[in-house]
Length: 188
Image 1 (spheres, one colour):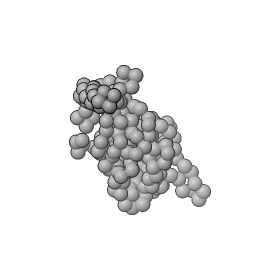
Image 2 (image 1 turned 180 degrees about the vertical axis):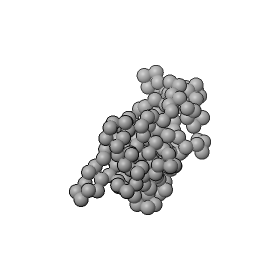
Image 3 (image 1 turned 30 degrees about the horizontal axis):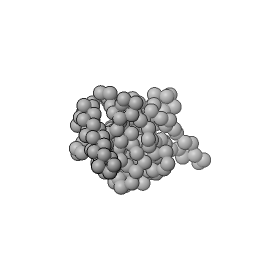
Image 4 (image 1 turned 90 degrees about the vertical axis):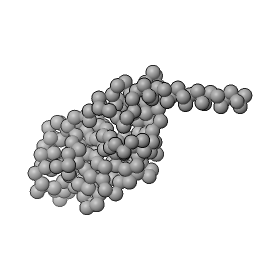
């Protein structure tokens, strides 16, 4: 795998949780396990539940639209909480009324302009499968999560994805299947 950080958009509900005493949180899921989504050029991707088992999330930041200029929280300062669960990677960051970026972000979420969450990650390992004529890359190992957070629009699904071309995936799948069939024939 390349050292490239890739981003993925999740068209999923993002919320502002109002707490007693006026404390609010921005919450969402940076990724949802087993959710198949398009990554462009006729290929798809799915993050498997075990992908985060050994992922480094000690420096992860919550960023609005992946912007370095719009950091909402981070793990080192304990202003971002991450929790992998059965659904995916849940995140929560405390709302700061004194920060104009938070005020803007909350306003956009309430207006429905923010459509979901996105994750920036380094993929350590994935493998292709063919399902219903579609190439699906199954991510089973992420080395670290750089950032996640609310986004207005999806990450560019037409951009190159970790040097994985659709035709290369098809060839890799065919190679894996040929090897599997040879092994099956040897055991018969």
